[in-house]
Each structure stands twice: as structure tokens, then as C-alpha cells.
Image (cartoon, rainbow, N blue to C red; front, top):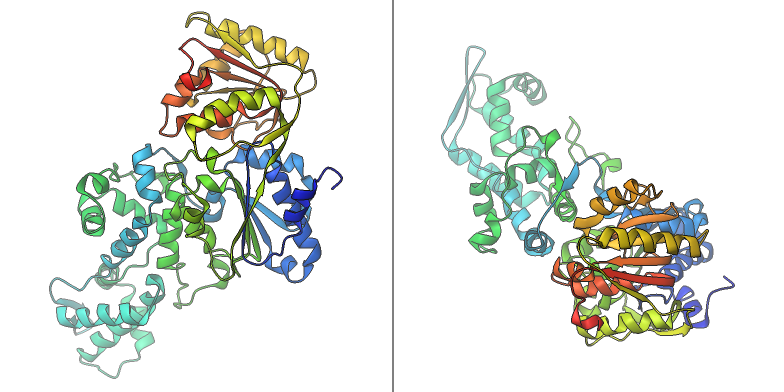
Length: 514
């Protein structure tokens, strides 16, 4: 705690109730402050937080590995550190969405789409059913099934919880139509479950569904997408969600933007009931006494809703910088973020204004970009004077990699024992790693080895939140062109270094840097 400054200490010791927004630009120490706050709250409020738990949500696994190095003791203090996908385990991720599709999946309209998609799976029969059983027949009419569906929707908040009740009512209705209306319902249920025709009736009227099954069916059917989304989306929007059906559910892959959609589906479906129709408490979503979210400015409304679902009492510490928002749902203000978080107690915003990490010379270059990327935001005041100004290295396309290797070797030598990163457009990370291999330069790759290596190739999409001794930013113009908020992504890339910064480019520099 010796390195904690007065404005940071105020945040750490702030009351734990409500949502606390810790706002700060690069180098203000907001991440370390939030993690120290988590440790402080656990120490001060050991009961009940030790039982309730503290959840820390990071933007990616590279970042989680980084904070494990910063505060390793947190792992021993009852703090669970996750990325969002860890909260919906058991699914295959790896699918990629373009920015337009990610925007739709992050919009609250997806909640309405999922709600409608579930209702579309609660279906009355299209024609009367007659099942041969023993010496007679068991019958269920269309009108009887309509009544069951309507009553099931009225009685139950979650879809799967109603399945056992619906099955019971169908069995009872069929018994009433049989030659033995006094038959024991459980005996009949057990016998009927062995009949494919009966199982088909249940699965048609009110199937038990997992979140993955629901989304797999929805995304792979234009008809189901139209039924679920036509009232809240344009045709172009809901058709963009369509994808080729995988051979099996086990082979279906979901994207990062699907994490919150899967969670929304789970909250509306509920866990799969046991054979007796009961839900096991262990299958329910876990809640936490305090939640810390880093880089919160990049979360969509659906993702914020997902995290709020895990808050036991509305107590949160959220950390971010509006100026560094680069996602499809980049907010213009904290009011937009807080609109999707718990409101049990008043929220408050505390700003960190002093930059302790980034040298003044680097911050001056980054501030030029910030003024264009987010004109209403201000950069922190740097209190550190650097040893040198950033190096801007212009080259040709043919000489780009050779210049990069030369500067990399220089920086690694000068920062011996430090950590150096080559921050590049995502599309270039593979080629840069290959060039380093050919030059026999040992390095790691973010996302595979974290940033444990002395030299790491880091795609700009995962560099946010990292602190490095030296950074080489490659082709800033390509970083800007790759996404809607490209200038903000460049601002993030330029503000990762605590000592040295180089910029290497073959394409003209963005005018905002000049």
C-alpha cells in the first residue's frame, strides 16, 4: 500500500454499497486501485464477503494473467478472477462476429428476441394426437394443448421449470381420455416416457432446452429468426444473425458477443430440471457480494445486464475510461453505462486525474490522438519526465519488417530485463511473429503465453489495460482503419509504455499524430 496516493486511497476505502465508478485515463493506476479495493473490502467486511465472494471481471485472458502478476495475493483472498465466458461454462467459443453483428447481439433488443424465441418453442398441437396404449388409445386435442401452453406461461417464470408440470398435465389429460381414468399418474408417466410418440408430443409442446440448443436452433433458421426478431429488428439485422447449422450441437461455436446472449437465454430458460422435475441449486447462477469490472467502457448493454444478474446486493466497483472505449457499444457518458447496472443504492463517480506511469513525452503524442478520438475527454496530467521522446520510424512496405526487427533488438537490449511489446493490427500479428522467428528472436504471443516473455507480439484488440516497459506500435494507420473507433484503439496502443515508445510505419501516419 506504500505506493498508493491520496486520491487512490480515497477510492479504496470508499463505502462498498452501490456502484462506484473509478474513472481514469492511462497510467492513473485505476486497475491497481480497484484490485486493492477488492482486497480492502474483503479484509474490512470479511463477514459476509468471505461467504458471498468477490468477483473480478477482466476484458481478456491476457489481462487476467497480467493482474495475477500485479497482485498474486488476490487469488488467495477469496477473489474469483474471470472473463465473461468463464461465467457460462460448457460452450464452445471461437466464432467471430463482424462489428455490425456484435452490435446487434449486444443490444437489449436481443433480450426481447430470446424471450420471443422461447415462446415460439411453447407450442400447441397443430392437430389432435392419438397414441396407441395397451388395448386402447390416449388422446390430446389441439384445444387441450392450447390451454396447457397458456396456463404454463401464466404459472411459470422460467421455461424449463414448467416442463414437468406440462408433462404431468398431458399425462393426466390422456388418462382421462383412456379406458382407465383412475390409473396412477406416476405409473402412467413412467410407461409413457418409453414411447417415442409421447416424447415427441412433449418435445413439440414444451421441450426442455439448454441455452446452446436454443441459440443453435435460432441462428441456423431464417424462419425462427424472423418469428423472434421481426418486431424489433429490420430484415437486414435479423438475417445477419443467420449462420450455417453445425453438424451437431457439440460442434457449434459461439462468439464473444454470444456470451451474454447465452446467459440471457439461461436466465429465461432456467437450468435443466432433474428427472423428478426439480432444479438443483448448484445449477443456478451464482451471485457475489461485490463485483469489480475492469475496462467496463467496452461492455455492451447485454454484457452489463449479464454481470448485474450476478450481483447479490448491487455493490460494484467499475473501472474504465470513456476515452478508451473501442467496442461497438462505446458509451458517450457514464450515465449510459450506469443505466444497465443495479440501482439499489445511489451510484457515484470518482475520477483519477494524475498519471503516474506514462512519461510526459509519450502522453503528449497520445493526447494529440485523444483530442480527435474523444474531444470531450481529457488526458491525465503526467508527473513523470521521460528520458527520451517517442521514436517515429518511417519506412517502406518492403523494409517494414527489417526495420521492426532492428528497432526491436535495440529496445530489448536497452530495456534488458524489462518487458517489451510489439503492438500491431490484429491482421498483422501472425506475419510479425513469423518474421521474428526467421530472425531467431525469442518472443511470446499475447493470448498464448500472456506477456510473460521479455518480448511479446500483442494484437491491439487485447492490449488494453497492460503496462509495459517498452512498446513498438506498428502501422498506426491500419489500426485506425480496422474499426469504427480506430483512433481510440490507437490512443490505447500509444499509452501502454512506461519508458520507451517507437512507432514504425510504411503507410502515412494518421494526421491526428502529426
